[in-house]
Amino acid sequence: MPVQDPWVRYLLAKRTVDDRALNLHVFRALQRVWSHIASDPPRIVELGAGIGTMVARLLDWGLLDRGEYLLLDLHPALREAGLPWLRTWAQERGWPFRVTGDSALLEGPRGVLTLRWRVEDVYAYAARAPAETVDLLLAHALLDLMDLPSLLPLLWRLLKPGGLAYFTLNFDAGTVFLPERPELDEDFLLDRYHASMDNRTIQGRPGGSSRTGRRLLEWAVAHPQVRVLAVGASDWAVLPTGEGAYPEDEAFFLAFILETVYDALRQDPQVSSEQAQIWYRTRMKDLEEGRLIYLAHQWDVLFQKVL
Ligand SMILES: C[S@@+](CC[C@H](N)C(=O)[O-])C[C@H]1O[C@@H](n2cnc3c(N)ncnc32)[C@H](O)[C@@H]1O
Image (cartoon, helix red, strand yellow):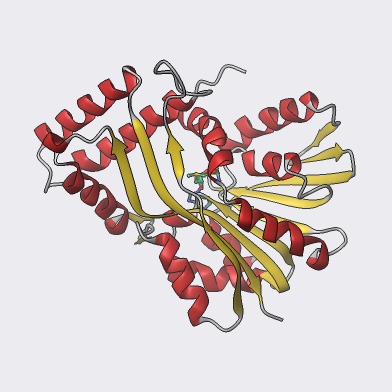
């Protein structure tokens, strides 16, 4: 499928990077406890689901086989792009995929999963959706865009007692580009990039934190109704695998990340436009010549709502 939209292409390119990064200790803890707590049929809600790569992954990795899966995202274009992508993905596995209105039935080898899409803001959904109905709540590469103190209590209300929250790829103030280039004063620039996450507002709310991973853990420990079942690092690591070539579409992923950092630096009055431009050109050249390495520090956490 030719992918035109850069954001959709980024989400697709991110898939292989995420597959490597997700913490297996945390995922295995989820696998162990899931069959003990899941309702029949299980109800799963994914917040900020993008094009649906997580549902595909959880089917491929054998966690899910049936139930009801809601894909919630603010942007209708992601459903438009995600639905045909998921259909193709299912066809490649020989699994029937039938679309009816705003939902699809996916017949896997062990059962039927009903997929539903909803275009809605996470806060609005979490405030109005019925309480204590969700078995598994997913948020993948999302929470660092959110105002955790206002969102987390709303999310907790949705989970049934004993229900699970599998929150993955929570950024935690670690960005590294290599090779080291002292002339770029990159520590300063990356501090400013992280500050842009801390200072961001989205629709009048704080738009996340560069320290989301640790904030999540602090929040859990301060709330007796939250139990942390497992935690582990899920760092992104992207590097050329041979002769300067990056796997799959990961060169595009890296270009997108460089562009994102550059955008933040350009808007920062503490960074001169010349310094931002030199940084961007140098790192793009590193990418084009196949020597750029990118690392980002993130955490995966599995929570349970205490009975
Ligand atoms: C970094 S992307 C991750 C997407 C997907 N989880 C993945 O990893 O492929 C964040 C997603 O959250 C969605 N999003 C951001 N803010 C949102 C909000 N307030 N309500 C619902 N979705 C939101 C975006 O549209 C985007 O699809």
